[in-house]
Image 1: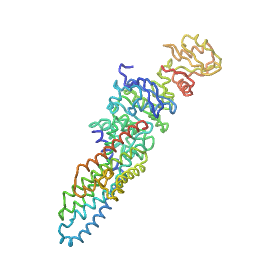
Image 2: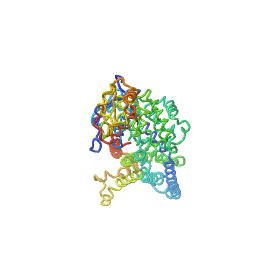
Image 3: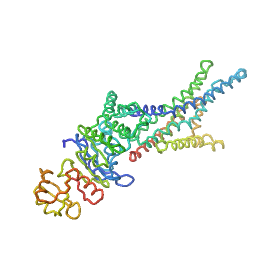
Length: 253
Length: 310
């Protein structure tokens, strides 16, 4: 795994060396902070009225979870922009051969690229999670529910990053890779919309859809079936990416 | 030739998109030798080099590096092969030192990475630009960074695909000197279109045409490479073969005034010149050994030569 770790660290450094990644991070943090402050203000206005209710929703329900849910939607756009250059830009610059000629196997190259990009996504998740977690200094949070939501977010991001890496391996155009990754994740997000409209929520098509598996985490439920779903999506996407890399060997120059 | 060559290609063929682009290539290269791989565009040079570098596996045959099959020991490529492709593989958003440090670790140098990077920077003349971003460097410097990544782990085998492309004449001259010096203690395979580069840098030459090895010989050996002679008088093959030092004579042009000669063992170019003058053939041009390479290359490239693989 040392070659994968080396590539992951290098990938992180390459991402960090570009203003684009930091600009993207700054915009996302600013956007989420704005949403967080608005939700917090709304909660402060509501708090006196909520005090009189039995089982009233707390700050976790009104501020933290909606913020993380909203961030999960943003990740569908954000992750493709982070992963789009991972392999596609190497193909454009003819630099993929550097890794291939160093005796690094396809799977290790893909894993290195994957974990490098995922590390950047994780930093963004940490930055956004820090906002609701900061409330722990002034109020009591539902830590269990918040932890479940964060686990869900991490699993969700892990699957999206793998889809992004796959698309980046498929084309030499980073913009096309981002568009393809966005299209695939969007499709996975809405694939069961029709079924749900008809009241079907436990068929095979529901199982394929992303919201079916991320929503339980936001409700505080960590179930193995949802974790397995995200792991399967990630593994399948990365396996196809490695397969694609095998084909690229004959074209690499 | 040593008992255990650094590189050996055994009946190597490769198919790409259903077409056989390299067929039955056999090559052997020892440490201390520089092999020039010549061929027109599409001759199969880059595919052959990719197989030698371990990027591409042969469809048929084996590539042996230090006696081990490259397909079965991918770690070999990491340690023992340095490869500079036609377009240098660079990460332009990093500085020269950062990039080379990554390459050093990629090739398995951990503790000694810093020293290896410093050595490669020094050897390739990158000292003044070591902290600059690769994206801000000129083409010549980028080529040198590419070369530095290929040599920094001191591999047994160095594979260079058209390293002189895009270099100005001064840089190209420096590159020749560098390749020559690398050839002293590494095995080097150099692919190029530039024949003078081959003559200046290489010990041996191999010419690929339409995927097949059409010629292989030592450059320093005039008997192997042939000698081109032009005379004012029309001479026939019998006249040449009367000279005891001439082993073989083939016409290089119609009219009997241009010939390619092969000398017998022990005969030298100056002995031939003396013999021609003595017989009063009217010597006009004599290109010894390496100069005849161009003729051989042009004939093979034009498709008129028969297979002359030695």
